[in-house]
Image (cartoon, rainbow, N blue to C red):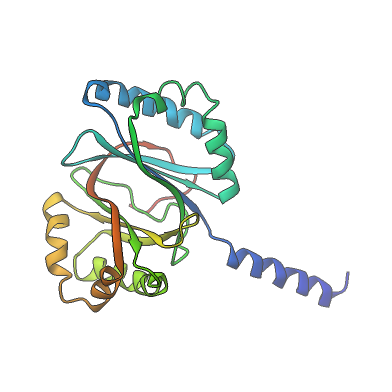
Length: 236
């Protein structure tokens, strides 16, 4: 093989890799009746014991609402959309997941797959320390304003870190529903998360982002209740 041909192949492979998301985020917002809350911890343990064996699984976290203990959110990271979708089909046949976990849910307000707009690396989110919380929003753009929201998203997340002192923040866009976005901000305390809107009030990027919002299916503060050991190094 000539050097020129080898170089062309290498450049094509690099371009293809650059175009593909470095990770896919699978998000499920769901509700568990109060009478079944005691079954959740053991079911989540079995969930991640199974998922950790699935092809393409990178990491997973389960969160519980700070204000409503019956509201949960699962956040799983996969190397490709194909692996994530394959895992979804496999999970419905997996007795360790379908029979013990899915049966606890009585509502699933939102489910989807997203890719970070800044294409950040897998396991880029720091581990949550005691007392830290996640401020998470799933929002839909107004008609014909998805592009503005996508453009404003990374700057808005940067403002979360600089102006509102978030430990980590990112915005991702859903693959199935490109008008929907996921914002993920990690704060040192509930008080810090609740004060963030006031601290962001003068930020133009926040105004541009939320000015494009037409619907908010999920908006809450969450604490982490379960996590699977990641298959990569996570910042502290």
